[in-house]
Every structure is written in C-alpha cells, then in structure tokens.
Image (tube, rainbow, N blue to C red):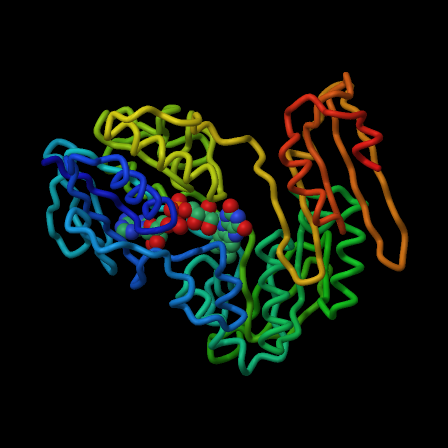
Length: 400
Ligand SMILES: Cc1cc2nc3c(=O)[nH]c(=O)nc-3n(C[C@H](O)[C@H](O)[C@H](O)COP(=O)(O)OP(=O)(O)OC[C@H]3O[C@@H](n4cnc5c(N)ncnc54)[C@H](O)[C@@H]3O)c2cc1C
C-alpha cells in the first residue's frame, strides 16, 4: 500500500481526501493529513458567520470515518526531507511518504507599519482569529478595519450589525473593492454602506497604529493626520501564499510566491504536488476555493490513474460576490483589463434604489469578458454562464 501525506488540513485538503477515496476503489493509498489548527477542516468562506455568532462546529466540513484516512490536528509540518521521502513535524516526528501534497493555504498580510504588531491588532483567516476578534470586540465601541475589499467589508458589517461595534473602514485605493469595481459602482456601494452606519475612509492610507502606555492599541493615524481612537484593529488587506517549506526543501516558488507547479499541480519533484492557495500553477496563484477544488480533483485523478475531468487551470479572474444583507454586488472577470477596442456598456438607475450594471465585451461585441453588477442578484448566475462565450442575443438586449 502507498502512503499519501497531505500537509495542511483546510478546504482543498478536505476535498482531495474525498476525491481520492471516491476514486481509489482498490484501497491502494493510505492517507495521513497534518493540520496545525486545533480544528478539523472547516468552511473558511463562512467565517463571517462565526463572527456573527454561529457556533464554530457548524462550519466543520464533514469527514467520514475511514480506516484508510488519518486526520491529525495541532500538528505542524516543519520540514520536508526529500532525499528520505519524509516530512518532519514541529515535534520532530519523521513521517514517510510516497506522494506528498502541499495544501498549506495562505497567510494574511500585515502592513509593514509602525504598531501593526501591537496587542489589539488582528488578522482574519482562521477560526482562532475570529474567536479572538469576537472576544476583543465586546468592550470596544469603535474598531478600525484596514482594507476595503471583500473581506474588510464583510468584517465591518459583522462587527457593526452583530457585535455592536462602530467600525471605520480604511482603504488606501481611491475607492472600495478596487480590484472588482469601477468608480461608479463603488460610489453607489459606499453611499449604501454609509447609510448603514459604516464610516469609510477611501483614498486614505493608514500611517500608523498607535500604542497606549500599556503597549496595547490606542488608536490609528491616517495619512491626513486624522486620529481614530480604538482598541481593535483588523487587517484584511490581502494574503500571500504559505510556501515557507519551499526554501529548505529546494522547491521553486512562483514570482509572486506559492509553490511553483505545472498544469497538473506537480512540483519539479515528481512525488510532490501543491494545491489551493499555496500553489502557483504555471506561476499563477489564486485565492479562491473553486480553483483549489479543481486542483484537488486533478491530483486525485493522477494518483489513482483515473481519467481527468476539466483542466485545473484557474480562471485569471474568478467571479466575486459581496455577501452582505441587502447589498448585492457581483464582479465577473477583470473589469480593469484593457483590451484594445473593448466595448463597455453601462446601465444606471438612480435613487431611491440605485442600481448599476456594466458589461465589457470583445471588440466584436459578441463575447462577454467582464461585468459589474450592483443590485441585480438574479442576473449574476446568468451572466457567469455566458462569460467568454458567444452571446445568445445582442449585448444591449442582455443589459436591458
Ligand atoms: C473570511 C474569508 C472569506 C472567504 N470568502 C471566500 C469566498 O467567498 N469565495 C471563495 O472562493 N474564497 C473565499 N475565501 C478564500 C478561501 O477560504 C480559500 O481560497 C480556501 O480556504 C483555500 O483553501 P486551502 O486548502 O488552499 O487553504 P486553507 O483553507 O487556508 O487551509 C490551509 C491549512 O493548512 C494549514 N497549514 C499551513 N501550513 C501548515 C503546516 N506547515 N503544517 C500543518 N498545517 C499547515 C493551515 O493552518 C490551514 O488550516 C475566503 C477566505 C476567508 C479568510
């Protein structure tokens, strides 16, 4: 029997185990999964639910009792000994493998600013992070969320609506959700969020996090010298792939980080694979779960010699949906990609319920490349199905 060792027990590792077990009918692989978190794999996408008060157990991803699968929590892999085909844990245990899959996810970025490491500063990636934010939120009348992207807005909304905190959102870019929205859409979104009580500071870099005499956070200072008093700062300003085992193991990294793998998710070492947020597939990293699941399926098909389904190459720009009650924002493709001759069609409907839609098409006007939708929840799945395809009707009809 062969030994598959998986480092990381998150969303894609969970999917890999399910995919492999469903394909490995003869039971050729024994699987050991190492996860450093104290929890079994859980739905990280639903962490905002935990922030809103849903019990942690409700997020757990179901794992069946299976004699061929061993799942270890609280176990960190510290090194890969490729010559010996062994992984060394932080406790010094040596675990042999025939195939090794790296599924170590990503780590949130903390800006390199004075005070960013003070007590009272948090990141938002794990159940433990969220539990810590919940505990800190209680006595804090104000909070500062750094990053006005998807995660930042979700965090601010949950802090505001469910924990009674009055959050400020600080975004260095000229408008909210800069990667997904244009200015017109972002302005409508900002106006709606301000009405709900969020205080937004757009086009405003954070200068520093300021300490109180006891060494905890006392507030923040923005680039225009505005000071906000707060005991709670949450950083939601991007992630980087967790690829810290690469250097010592002699595995290459992508230009923007991540274990460099080919289209089959294989590193240059034929027995080592990488999937999910930690992988740079042909140099391109992703940060969403759908491409990670496709990678898990791809590796499972290779290890079991079963036919491969859809290719794993992730879309360059996956679709994004902002999941706030009463706020429907969706972005498909890259609305900022400028193809010479691309056609842009927009639709704006003013107050009392402002709505906005933008379609970006190839120069021939037949193929949809990107879209922004505000206040059109039902149009999103329909447009997503049309992305990159020839449109069934004219773009004007579609927009209408
Ligand atoms: C709040 C939030 C909301 C999100 N919303 C969405 C969304 O709406 N849609 C979407 O597509 N994506 C979303 N994402 C991103 C999505 O969660 C990730 O793309 C997905 O979790 C990636 O899965 P993964 O298995 O690669 O990494 P992870 O799920 O992060 O799992 C990696 C695991 O490996 C562990 N690990 C790392 N190094 C080691 C080691 N050396 N030894 C042992 N264990 C290790 C980590 O502790 C972690 O548990 C969201 C993320 C967050 C944080």
